[in-house]
Image (cartoon, rainbow, N blue to C red; front, side):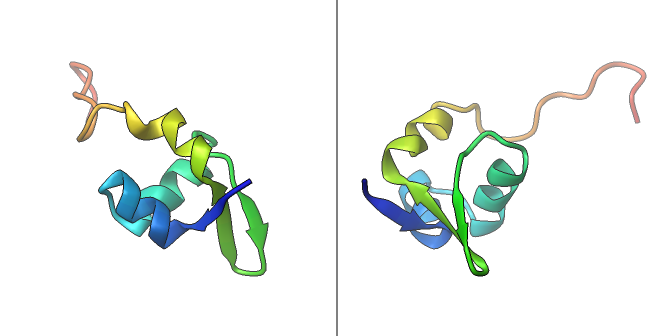
Length: 63
């Protein structure tokens, strides 16, 4: 099992560390917390690799 840091995950996904942390917080990217660091199975990156870039469009009438 290859565990990587959020920094390494961000580099592999081409996103910011903040985005990786948000994916973990949203439950979309599993991780193991060790101290202050989240460690991620490299194979779990496939769960979020095919996501659409950017924010979803706003629903009409939503602020």
